[in-house]
Image (cartoon, rainbow, N blue to C red; front, top):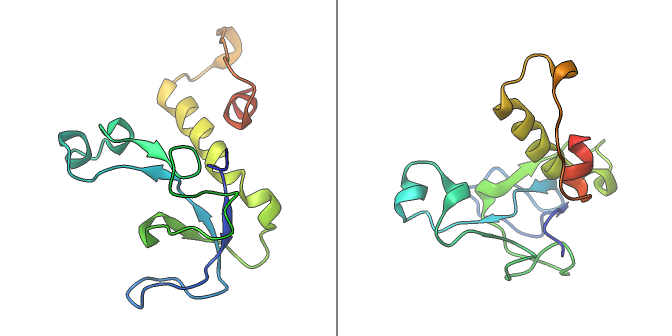
Length: 123
């Protein structure tokens, strides 16, 4: 599917904080930036929402893909790119747990549906 990926910059706008060869983690979301949901910072609920690599326009299995520089997050040179692809799904899982606002999980039961990277991260 290729929607959880990282890579190295081939070329970047001069106005961006990116440079060729730099390692980056990608936020794969596709959203319009124009609908009422995007205008209220709810890009996760965009009417045209999707993912690079899943909804088209290239992704992690592509030789190269165009990504908005605002969705590229620079990584330290010491970060192993084979592991950096897990940053986005781990961040999604962490955010979901934080949104639950549970202080003590010891007395809670949870159903996790799906055994992909996000489901496994929740476990």
